[in-house]
Image (cartoon, rainbow, N blue to C red; front, side, top):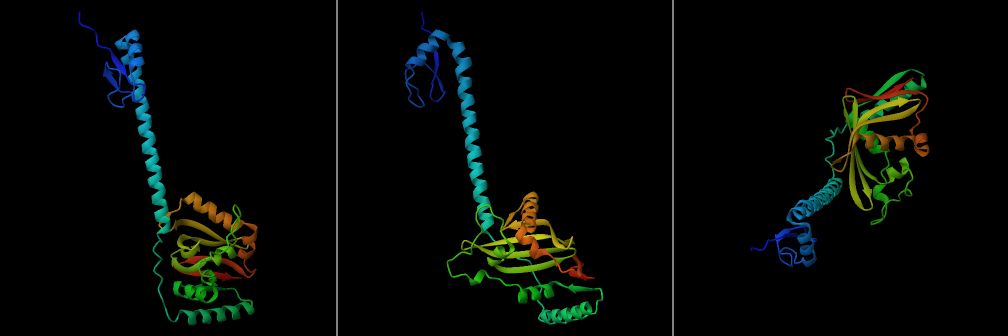
Amino acid sequence: MVARTVNVVCPKCGSEQEGGIQCRNCFAVLADQKRIAARRGPRAQTDYTPARGRSGGVFRLIYRIFTWTSLAFLVLAVVLILRKSTPPQVPIDPQAAARVETKLRESQSAAEAGQPHRLRLDTPELNAFLGANLALNGNLAPPGEAPSLPPTGAEPSIAEVQSSVKDVKINLLDDRVQAYVLFDFHGQDLSLLLEGRLGVENGYLRFEPTSGKLGSLPIPQATLESAVRRLLTSPGNREKLGLPAEIGDIHIENGNIVIAYR
């Protein structure tokens, strides 16, 4: 009589083989498994144990794919954040500063006379005004010393944000403003590119973001709106965003910032 060969399954790696006391793949001992297979019969052993081995292999494969994919996305995000976005092309006009001074004098004269009027500044004029009046303190910190940051969980104030800013470029596009900010974060230069619409609400300056990038990494719209809202509505910042009573509106129109005086 010819002896019947019983298939056995390795309890360690799940591979199936005909007889033997040691797994050909992982060299685990199969003596006990062989006796169990002989009692159950070849069909029962084939129908049950291999399925479990195949299932475990699939889950291990899915887990490995998920782990490596998550790591790849994390590395990509860090690279994009550290890679500064391209600053907007801001036109340079040597006469812009002189025009701003003239417009400001005319606006002040009209305000003193109580006349409603509008002050319009184009992109070169606005950047000239900011360059002369916006204090960028990022370069004033001692070398190697990062600007002070708010405690963990605290909302950053506008003054704290400004203290780390090294460069600002503003571009006016139709009815939107595009702001490029280069700032220092623990000794590393990072860039922030924001685009949105300006307005006034209840005497306070309002900014509605439409898009943004941290470095070269696009910021999700919901995250962007939440961050801007928290920055503008925190008690310490809201005071600084209050406008003088004589200013009724601020908006972007045809590539110009328009300040309406009552």
